[in-house]
Image (cartoon, rainbow, N blue to C red; front, side, top):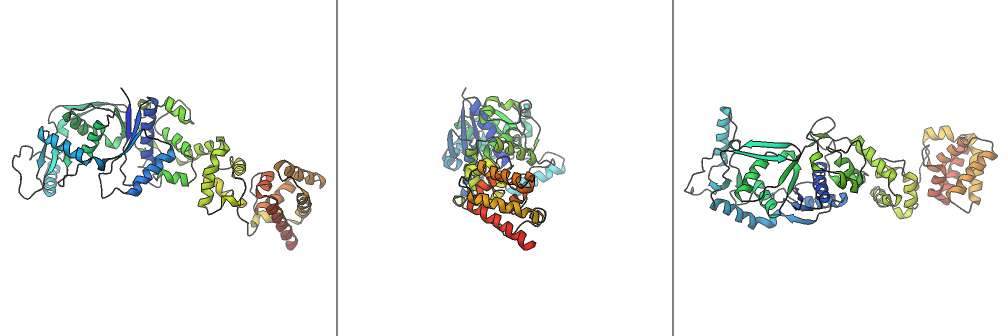
Amino acid sequence: MTVRTRFAPSPTGYLHVGGARTALFSWLYAKKMQGQFILRIEDTDRQRSTEESVQAIFDGMQWLGLDHDEGPFFQTDQFPRYSETIQQLLTQGDAYHCYCSAEEVEAMRELQRANKQKPRYDGRCRHRTEPLDGVSPVVRFKNPQHGTVEFDDLVRGKISINNDELDDLIIARSDGTPTYNLTVVVDDLDMNMSHIIRGDDHINNTPRQINIMRALGGAIPQFAHVPMILGDDGARLSKRHGAVSVMQYRDDGFLPEALLNYLVRLGWSHGDQELFSRDEMIKLFDIKDVNRTASAFNTEKLLWINQQYIMNSDAQRLVEPLAYQLKRLGYDVDQGPDLLELVKTQQERAKTLKEMAEKSLMFYQDYDEFDEKAAKKNLRPTALAPLELMLEKFEDLSDWTKEPLHQVVLDCAERLELKLGKVAQPLRVALSGTSVSPAIDATLFLLGKEKSLKNIKKAIDYIKLAD
């Protein structure tokens, strides 16, 4: 059997982390089993579906590298097929027209609630043979009234539902448009889905869909319902926990491979291993190993994983995302230092690419004034001599690279018989305006000779004016 999985989002919003994890699990299982992964856009809700949401889904999938083997398919292209299937079910007696108004159905359910019964449609139109003039009916699926629906969920094990717990669901609205439970069945059968991996909020739909599949004579796929993701406080995941567009994570400076690594560990594990390459995920992942319990989203853990990826990535890999972050901050990357050298310098100093960009702004802008605390501590009269000596040596230096720059600082400290910190820290404040910067030689190199000399002169003037 060829394994075929699908990711079928509704384009009524962005691709969030819950959907991204479902897509990842489906993608991984298809890749592991050398099958196909299909992307299907379930856009039949015309009022809520938007082109912007469709593009957001495409962008998110592309950024994460979850490439599809077939698709994208759009359900709105399939309306003739759905109409044909609805008619087939009507003809073979597995569906019927229902003329009950929404008010009638609600009154029916209110009475059932009052009698402490499960609210449901009672099937009163099941055997109706005459149409009701002036009323456009819905079409309901004639759910079996006896027996059970059983399926072996790959995550949750055997699930059994009595048919008498299921009512006759609507498969076509009064205007003829199909409903979700009909369209998803038709598509899954037509696309020969072998495995349906989706959120556990769909468990209640599954027995209904299996019954429709049986009525249509289709092969029943295997189901895997993965638990939801919770916030770290145990509440349902919301925007404050991280239920935002996956593209927001790009804008916040996360690497897609780090986010995927984090998502795969939300409900799945392989021993104590925390970090997985894409190839390792494919090799080791099995949908049967996904936990049954909900997982909690932990931003601190995601930050840690992202930091590991930044630290261990090839520097060239980080050039483009760093450039993206700098441009978002309004800086021209062509008017600054070599980005590859900048990455190499900052790679171990940031948890996100956004933080790396923010820590690199000193190389793109002039500071207006010194940090008061840093200047008070380091730009004192005793710093004047080392700064003036280094200025002289730097002005004469023709090879503006890290090794000779570092040697100048060492030589000046030795000549003035000062500890290195008494020379280097005033220089750091002179160069950056604060007490924090990368290594001195790297800071000098990235700033360049002209800007470094200008900043040292600014510090010297500051000390002289304050004296």
